[in-house]
Length: 446
Ligand SMILES: [Zn+2]
Image 1 (cartoon, rainbow, N blue to C red):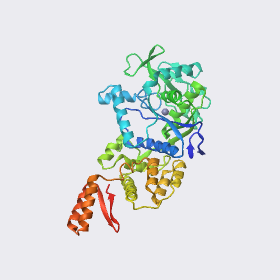
Image 2 (cartoon, protein in one colour):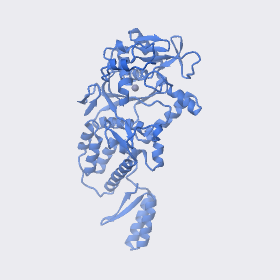
Image 3 (cartoon, rainbow, N blue to C red):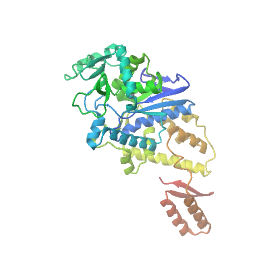
Image 4 (cartoon, rainbow, N blue to C red):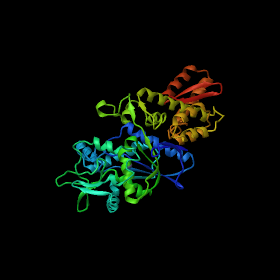
């Protein structure tokens, strides 16, 4: 299996560190309904896990849910996202977190994404966060300012390496209003203090005053607690490279002296109609918005997997329509196979091989299109991509079977009017029927 490793900027042969492949995925900040662009990342990483399983690996994956302390900017300024959500909806921050965690996990299931072995809430790791800050301080990596404990990035010699940062350039370009107490522009808070009178509902006592963890910290502490570093694969979006993941690497090194991860995978953003996803453009579509236009989560998953996680993706409703049609065509090929109309089969190893090459599902899909697959092969294809092809098919209901039998009888009696009426009845249930020399064959309409 080959993966493009952001850490080395190379396509590499994947070699696991131990018996089980340890994977960590940076999860969502749970303060609003994720849009379809957010879910693309989880679809790509679902494909990663499914491909590893197809290659015979055991996987132990952890996903975090950021339910505290993530400010609107990647840095340490701006509003807390949870507080922002609470103010918007007139709820407590805890209610906001609970509400959006449920939405996220519901969508996760609707997209048929394999559930990670552990899903961790940041608020369950506050004691570990404090111990981590203690360790970083003891090892000489932090300093205190009036608003928190900061990581001194100048103390970590490799800080700029991961993202190939130009620290001098960052220094020169730092905004004039940048926190004057910070020693370097790239320094970041590992713990924030809550000032007297400041509204921040989520708060924990540490160093004799109320505060909350910096948002980069949870990933380092959760990985340490649940997987143990170094892990095999760390995934995220390309926007995580210069700040969030760079800071995770620095923290883990400062806490334990360990490397955080061997392989780093980052997915690119999705554009919609050639533009960035943004509220002002009115193109922040959710899965519910797609459903209102007649598209299932599986149609969207099909669309995502038609492209590559590192590619420039442009979502349009026309291309989603095409993905939906392709998935329907696959379901109908399975239906034919199930009805015994397809007897020959093709080895699917070429399909697995394509996707093992840095998750090239587009190439794998082209091979599926060109292959003649047995029903068993289709089961393997469905397990590899998680497209619910078989769950939605291949069998029809007893009522549909009864209509088909009645129609066969009508045709045997040359009662063409009745036969046509029964076809219309069948189509109202979502399938149509074709007459072949060997009898009736049903096919899905959608
Ligand atoms: Zn993270």
